Image (cartoon, rainbow, N blue to C red; front, side):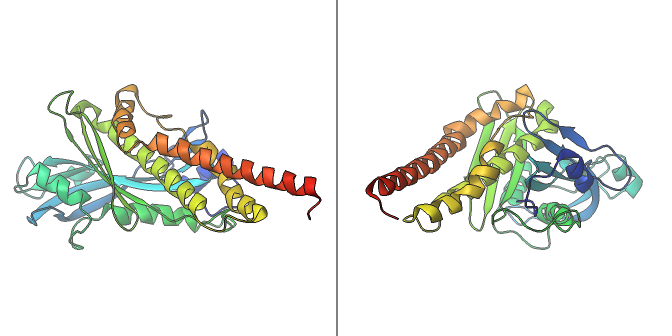
Length: 300
């Protein structure tokens, strides 16, 4: 949740995510306001995490960006595309800078082993940590003097680790989502390699909507439920600032939008969201009925 008491207008949100260098900020107003920074490159030369513990060295640049949705929700993300180094050795930085967002594997490495390591819950801290790159971009926005530091509600951060691998055929294409411990989520995508450039947008979209669902569930399940006034005050920030942000697939290409179908089969994010919204409406309706009954009885 952005550290602002009110939803930021689009022009102010653009100022928050703008990066040095003058590259254009991406923005869209329909169906919901969204701004995203240009890619911020971070050079890396380190080991990659792997399930087997194999020491695989990788060199290149990670592309990070920060975005704001609906003037309230801020997200940092980082990604790279991995390929085998053509010459089997480390080259000069000019070679890697010419391929932004690409990282080359030096030496041997198994794709599935590396993919498993990248999304693993427990990893060697000496290996590449994309989360720290994304968090740095997000924290820079949250510390901005343009914000009043008065978020309308408290909400914990979540982290999504994802990988995309080629699908052998259409039957294998899809996405597998899981909730781990300590706010970690994992997402494994299988798709046509021609769609790899757009998979990052899909994963960002999943992360945003999973956060919305997790935050709304916490609001519904936490706090007192007996007193109508307390119930209204607990639910009000979520109703005013979160419910309208649920718009999955709003900015995805047609090819990538199909991946949401597999998420609707399991875990069924949209079904959970609708159920949660219905619970809020039921609680508000029940509270209103209780108030009307009290007034009819002449109770204070």
